[in-house]
Length: 155
Figure 1 (tube, rainbow, N blue to C red):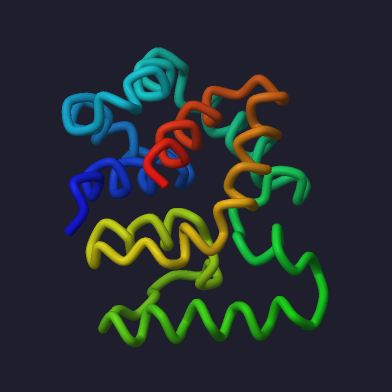
Figure 2 (figure 1 turned 90 degrees about the vertical axis):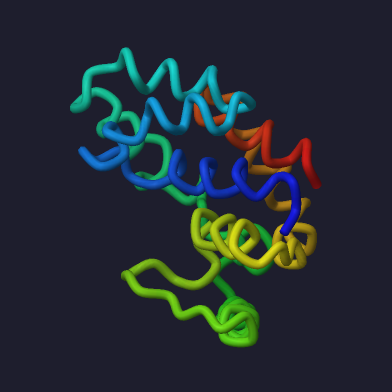
């Protein structure tokens, strides 16, 4: 398991919808992953509804900040379907199964895979997409950019 496993797990949590469970974990995230402290501190002082609305504005309104890694490589082409199958095969080979409604290329799921298995293959294969996402989040001026900064610094 890489020394960055805790960071990947914490980043996965930071990049999911900020519900009550997320807010309850903020003190643990702050201590476990100091690289994410700027984002965690921001999330802790931002009212819950405001943080949730910001998440939706950043990640759910357009694909400009997509958390689906194959979109950065394949866009909305038929190749994306084949990429998603590849992601699923990697999970299966690691003995993991996705539970939830997000496709297998959802960045928080890929980060959790890296945290649990130490396999950084999908992250490194999609580093260009991660860098594009990081750059766009930075340009957008969102604190979520600091999460991507920390992840990209490890790859």
